[in-house]
Each structure stands twice: as C-alpha cells, then as structure tokens.
Length: 220
Ligand SMILES: [Zn+2]
Image 1 (cartoon, rainbow, N blue to C red):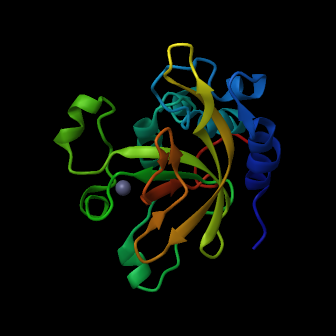
Image 2 (tube, rainbow, N blue to C red):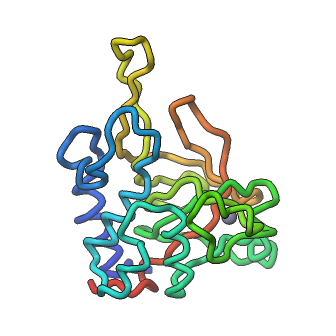
C-alpha cells in the first residue's frame, strides 16, 4: 500500500534532518536543546516531538504536549485525539496483524509481562509521584518507526547513550545521541529488543502502542 504524503515527509524530510546526530551537534539540539552531559533524563521524547512540530499543530492541539519532550504526555495526547493504537496481544490471537507503519511514533512501556495487558492504556498522570494511582505501566521509551515489516524492525531513536570515556573525576562520560536502531519484534510476547542504555543492552520491552500519524490532527 502506498504511504501517505505525510508519512513520506515525516521520515524523508524531518527524521533524516536530525538523525543521526549527537550532543553537542546543532542537529541534536533541534531534538533537545537543553540536555547536557550529567543530566539524567532521556532525550528520546524530543525526536517524535520535533517531527510533530514540523508536521504542525493548531495551538489547541499543541497544548496537549505531543510536540514536547514528555513521554506520558505523548501517549495521553494520542489517546485524547483518537490517534492512539493500543498494541494488544488479544488482537493478535484473533488473527489481526496490527503493527505501526512508517513514520508512526511508537512507545515502549514497563508493562511486560503482564501489567501492559491489565492496565495500559488510559490517560495517566504526568507526575511520576501519582503513577501509583493507575494500574497501567509507565512509558519508558518513544521513537519513530522507519520499517516494521517482518520481525526485524528499524526505528529512529533519540536518548541513546554514547560512552565518551571518563570525566576528569573518573566517572563515565556519557553523551546522548539520535540514531537508527535495529530491533527484533516478538509478535507472541509483543516486545521489542534493541534498547541500549548507559548500563548496556536492556531486556526486551513491551510495545505499548503507537500514535498513528495519519490519524493525528497535524496540519501538514
Ligand atoms: Zn503498555
């Protein structure tokens, strides 16, 4: 099936404009201009946020926060505008092959093996101290789908760690970058591999769902 013009633009014009890049490049600062070595937060939300801002949003839509950096607000914004696709194992058991398309914003959550199926997704409090009020898992990573056919996927991701050696005080010098990542999709478990953090390769995480960029009320 032919890709929508929006999907082609999202990848060819917007993702490729800033990926790959690394702190302190100008391209990386388009994704997150505030991050600096030593800051503990992940810059991953900045990449879908950048693409969303480039696709354009009316002011009342932009207020939902999809163009920002927050991970939970990204999912909440998709749910609010009916563009969120929940990745349900039940759908697969019914024989439906639901998977994101090129350009969609995908989200990984902490809900594997069971909390995702029991609790995700609902509009969640963005204050981490209030997360215990809901049963859903928390969003841990977001990025943009480049290829999602078969089980070997490719995604574009910010918030990736690069070990730059050691600081003068002996602590590890970690920079963040944005790059293309190959991931293995497990359609039985609903997980994606390929996350590499400051501590090395992370275990597979649950594909919580994605924002279908054709369904979201972008201007362009
Ligand atoms: Zn989830």
